[in-house]
Length: 310
Image 1: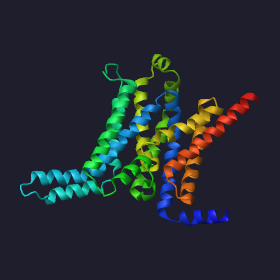
Image 2 (image 1 turned 180 degrees about the vertical axis):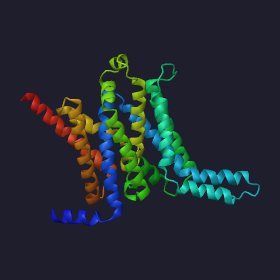
Image 3 (image 1 turned 60 degrees about the vertical axis):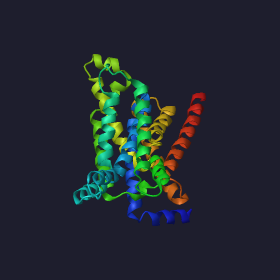
Image 4 (image 1 turned 120 degrees about the vertical axis):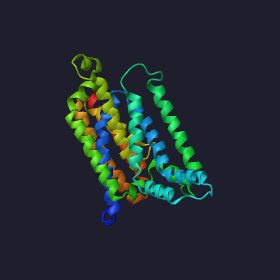
């Protein structure tokens, strides 16, 4: 036990580990707050669909410098890339990927949950179409414009977040902190409205609450959290990070506030345990966090059965 503590202490002295812990705990907290609303409104699949959109956007952000250079070379009569095109490509390469991924994911969220009933493709069909299409386009772009010789490794890292959380830069951490503050403020300021829309949307509309607008706000916040969580657990495991803590809390607590508080505690503890366990056992961070969430879910299911019998 002492050796494990010493090992963790030595790792925590490195800035990249400190960044991973800060970002991981913030993402876990934000995910748990929104997860309760998504589960109760049966919007869980939308989170999964938006995570696949984020994968396609991340792939586009990664290969965009290569695309710019190839287009410039094709336009040029000599077949060489001009200095201007190189400068633009280098600027895009140095740009934080989140500045490209975030707008695309937000647009997808707005399209999926925009107010109105005139859409020809609705509900789960629209989510499935955007989800599968984004995965396919993203994987095709990474193969057509490879940025490294290890395409499988790049895809795996993007899908499962295996190592990207340990390569965060100070700009990534600052952006994560800023977006986390935005998510927390939105949830605190509009708590009563979100509560009302979550439990009875028709009654909320009757009392004058703009339910469509708050559904759109929930979708936007979901997009923010998904972009934040890409580096932590990857695009395929984001839904688990959002859903499992909420489902675990619902096994024991029945009030909305109680479920939110318990969900936040579970999510933060599982994130911390997952990050530290991945350091000690050299396992992927995202998969380890989700495994901890799954274990806690089964524990809470057992607790629920025991309390019901009692």
